[in-house]
Length: 602
Image: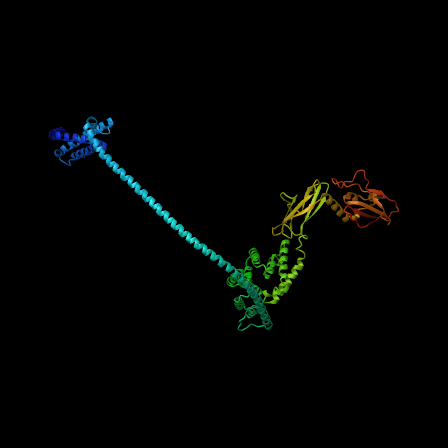
């Protein structure tokens, strides 16, 4: 290691002796030039940085023996000297904050040289500034030119748009004129269509009448037609094959009849019955769905919707009637949905719905309004007979005043017992005192109603004796769970007490008078009449068949305790032993009189 160090030291001394002087001189000159050019940029820093990097590279190359040390040593000394001197100059510039350099601050001639160089710099800057401003002006001019071009384009577009609007306005005016002309022509066309429709309706009616007559003649002849061509012939054959049990040919004949798109109900209802027997309801629905899509006759759509299930069928029937309010057969078919045959047991609402639909159907009979819907007139006659029979059986079910709940109040010493009577079986009953507020359910009894198969609702409820006159609302659920009501019933405690007492007196009149009761010979008791005196205005009687010229004076009615007999009042009077009979007549508070009642003494 000592030999290597001695060799390196010798080499360094030799290099310094050969190159040290000129390297130091050149480095000094470089630092001075960098200092003088400082106004233009930090050249001293640039020289110091470049020389330091060069020295580092040369040193690394020498260590790695990439170059010969003897050849690289002069360059290393030069780079190191330049980095040291330039770095020192840059350091002094920073410490003295000299913008023009250290030499310029000490030597005035150098400052003048810098000033002359600065003039050039200012001129160059001025030229650059002028060029920049010129460029900005050019951009502004270009922008203004673009704006003018854009404005010109917008003006052109506006003019084009105005021209188009003018043309559109002209077109609108022409369209309005054309529409006016079309409306006038349309009214004439509509009138012609109405006349054509009326003629078509008459033609269809005449066509069905012709088919019906042909069918009637064929039915009288009997036997299948060998080569059918007309609708009546196909319908006749379908009926013949069906009666003979040849369902395949019957089906073919019905389909052939449907191909004529005849708007008659009875052939399609019979065909639907055959299909349900053979293919089930789903099969019938599929066949009539296909026919209804292709045909125009409403009767095919009507019979198609009859192939759906209960609730869906009723909804579709109602929708059909809403769209075709004068299609009479639909009302008969709707009535069947609420009939006893279909439902088994009917509610009052079911009966009313059936009666309304049947009444509507029968109303079209006037003027032969039903004939055009039937090929087989015997089918129409059957529908009419069934409708009249059912309407007679339903009676006055459509009279809303005949079928409402009634309320029977009965007063006791404890208060009022209210008994509800309904026009039909119910599954729940509720009531409300007054015009508003919630309803109270009466509850269920511990027994089943044989008519509904469900627990019987309690038909009564209680009210306190202090209840004032008010409205009592009653509502109930029918056997199908549909709510009926509410029905408002007027409750007057005074009137109810009088009516209740009157009812008891009329019902139990044999107890008005009792001769010699309890072994009390010669006494006539009228205790029952006394207990229910709130319904009595006067009591007249006669003895042994004489005139009713005697009167039993009753104490006033005590509404708070109506059945109590005053302690100071005697409920009897005395008669002689020769009295054998007594006649009594009661005048009630409502002005009516009872029959004259006869009582024999035993």
